[in-house]
Length: 362
Image (cartoon, helix red, strand yellow):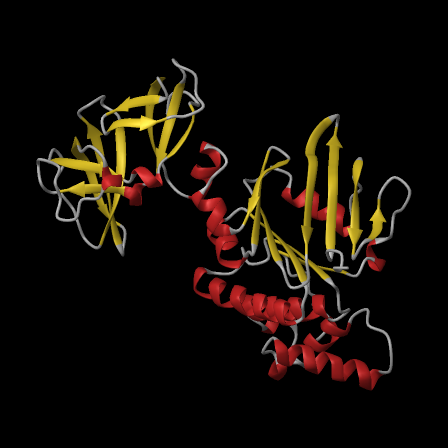
């Protein structure tokens, strides 16, 4: 018989003033697994985290740790007994305590044993040489490492992390994220990370749970959730998108790029064909026959350049299409800066397109 998940949440619901801010949220996280609760501000991510931590109480649903209920209609285990670690954007270190004192705070036992445990934890996070320093003497990245050591000190089976890296500058963020993730995985800790940044979720998560308006709208591995979005809003959350609008006739939609299959949609239904800018290809042959055409590229269509910008490792080119006056964007590797007014032929990767019911004018 397989072991139960480290953390299991069943149909969690929370109401504020009669409004559901978290609705029917369910997820499970196994040993050493990292799940990212991803979504825009105000979607219910942090409220979900607070209920799991025990600092807020759900109106319905159940929370289980290693198969044991810790909060439901009959049981409510206090936060300090849940074996759940917490890390937040504010590191909340005690300014009057040294690094060692912060990590040791709340631990019980012989002083020598506690000191040994603190030294071991600080070694894991690369902070041994700062053991007797105080928080105000540390950089933001160093304070984050100390906060991680302190969170690990009680040996939690689960770690909850609420935007813990957002206070770090870009140069440090990736390094600290990777180091933190390595330590947590080595400990076999189940991690639930709250973030509003898709890139962070893609970099860290084994599974992403995408939230919107208090509900989880899609769950899956980063590759799957990126390449098979549940709807247009899910696709747009991970990157810029182009939207080509059409109307279904006989399970087909006519566009500037030819006909697209739209199975399952009734005739007359307006649909949005969604494609990311990196999958819009520029064909420098005016007849639409590039050097490496593929069957997925379909029919070429002409657009006129409105603006081109160099973005560092790639260029973003914006077009106005001859067919219907719609605006499309293409991402081109390296430097490509055609002048406004330049006509160019475009093709799209049909195997990279998603067809959804129309959301109306873009």
